[in-house]
Length: 212
Image (cartoon, rainbow, N blue to C red; front, side):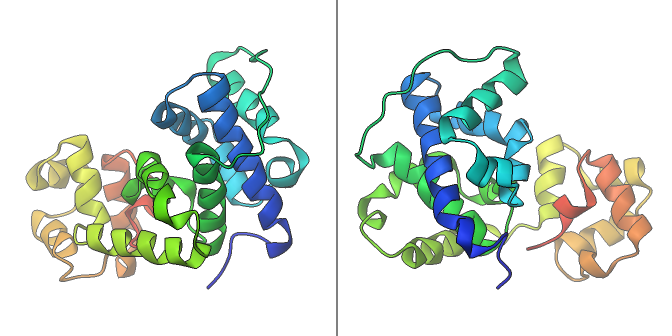
């Protein structure tokens, strides 16, 4: 399995993400899902997931949380953090997500497509007492269960297009779209132009349509 970055930084990354989530939710009083979505939208999630040393080791979790808010609102939070030695469900959620993202090599965005941050928090009991590999097994099982729907179908449903409407928007035939959605043909082996046309019509990236 290809990990996202050197294992040497994993523990620091886990602490940073755990502190970030705790500060955003418990100190700034931002809803868990809302703050996690802010993290994803801000662009910091991509940098963090790729092992950008500024975020996985250089900044504290509190500094990262403040930058997340600043990037989206233009305001730098002044609220002082309340430090605690307790690894409560919010702290653990950030801690385990940082580890799972590193372990699986997936982006935080892709993980969030099949496993919500609230689901992770609700897995605190019993998984916070277990080896992280047990959490990975459970998360992978959820991913497999939800992969009965192709990513092409998922993005088509998300934007509200029928197969014929997508065919008209993309220039790819309805028949080919049906083949890809039913997995009779592998979209990963399609011509680059075909995938690009579909991605453009669905307002997503080519990578978004690729099956993990």
